[in-house]
Amino acid sequence: MRLTNGFDISASALTAQRLRMDVIASNIANAETTRAKFVNGRWVPYTRKLVVMEPKGSVSFADMLRGRMRDGAGQGVKVTRIYEDPAPYKQVYNPSHPDADENGFVLMPNVDILKEMVDMISATRSYEANVTALNASKAFIMKALEIGK
Amino acid sequence: MEFSGIHPVASAVSKKGAGKDSPRAVDVSKLTGSFGSMLEDALQSVADQEREVHKLNEQFITGQISDVHNLIIAAEKAQIGLQLTVQVRNKVVEAYQEIMRMQL
Image (cartoon, rainbow over all chains, first blue to last red; front, side):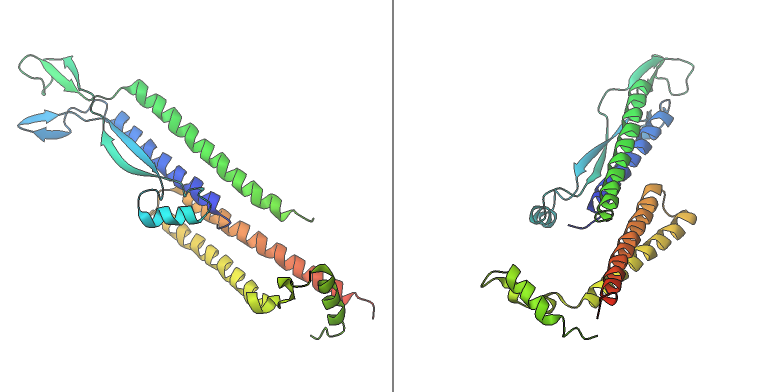
């Protein structure tokens, strides 16, 4: 086990949380986007995106073996997939909108700003927690240097 | 440097500390390589870490990386590596001075 293993684990979590933050920012930015894809002659609104996280080194055999042969503490986290929320789009009555159908309804993205805000708080706090963990790892090493002083 | 005068004392101490057929009787330096090469390896890895920081620094300045934390963590790693090296060096110098102070 390397000395700075804890650093790498926390760093992977920081990278993952940053990507999650980017996805949330994209969701908020596109909360009113009605033209994301053009399917069968109709515009489809933006679909909310979510991240899937997996522990690093749990999928491939080589990684798993390496993990077991060491102390089994793991190697951090990674985002393996960004998937689209299957929830239905919101229907809003707005006949003057250029993308309204014959009944005057417009399909709006399935993004809920409130949910995104909560996710954003969660991502921010998670990032902070991982920075704290990293500082704790560093404090361990610095304390070890003080042995015998 | 020749420490032949100390050698009988040292071997007596090690015999006293070790049992009859303990592996301590084996010459440790033959198993682990010289202290100098160990120190050289450690210094090399510290230098590598610092080179890594320089590389990341350049990438950050030219806008090739967006993750600031990776740069900061690399810098922290290099700093800790350097401090470890300095501590080991201090211990070595301390031991050397201790021996030089020995009454003849």
